[in-house]
Amino acid sequence: MSDFGTESNPSTETYKQGSGEGAFKKRLGIVATCVVGGSLVALYAVTGPFVAPALRKVCLPFVPATTTQIKNVLNVLKTRSGSLVDIGSGDGRIVIAAAKSGFKAVGFELNPWLVWYSRYKAWREGVHHNTSFYISDLWKVSFSEYSNVVIFGVPQMMEQLEVKLQTELQSSAKVVACRFPFPTWTPDDVAGEGIDTVWVYNAKTFKPPIRNDKDSERQELATN
Image 1 (cartoon, rainbow, N blue to C red):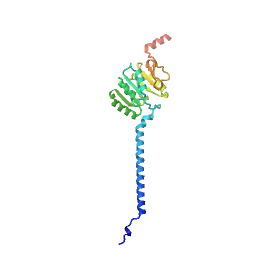
Image 2 (cartoon, rainbow, N blue to C red):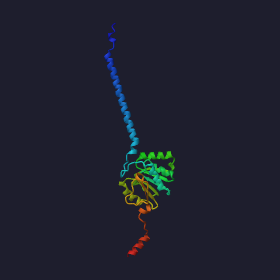
Image 3 (cartoon, helix red, strand yellow):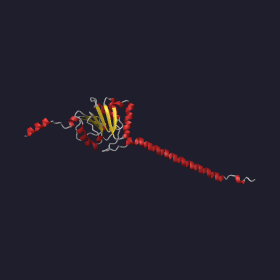
Image 4 (cartoon, rainbow, N blue to C red):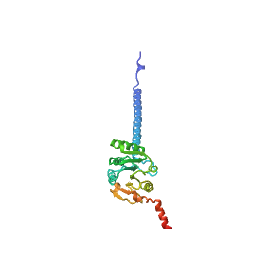
């Protein structure tokens, strides 16, 4: 019996081998693309909220406070105590530092990723019992219960915030503005320099005096 029908064709085997290698490389390329793409999506999901501004009435980008800024804030409040609120608390570093200095500290932040990270960081630093972080728009929160207010603002929002704080804060409160001062208030103290500068405002100086009914009656009698 002839062996001719069972002989292999070298060119056919080479073609099949080349096709198999080509298909494998193609599949490998697809897998690699999926892995890289998935990694980039995951990286953006984790880091994006830390570098992109959250949606606010006025855009307030997240820029972490420097170590010097934190020291300046705590230094100008070293004779103070009680409650402290950080408006736009970011990753929570001001709130956590204030809690370590004895304040009952609260942070309001619109970005949920930053709030969750702040809570975890406070727990890790052992101050979670003296800190609270809330996901909230600063324009929808009343700050009337806080005796110390810290704000890392931008120029576009400071005038609006003046009106809000002037209306809500008690006359015993103090406000610390970082990076940018309030446009019409006169600071009682200034500490630091450059981007680390902080301006301190006493609510007694920017709140209008409270007049009672007797004062109004006396003024009416004097004008009549």
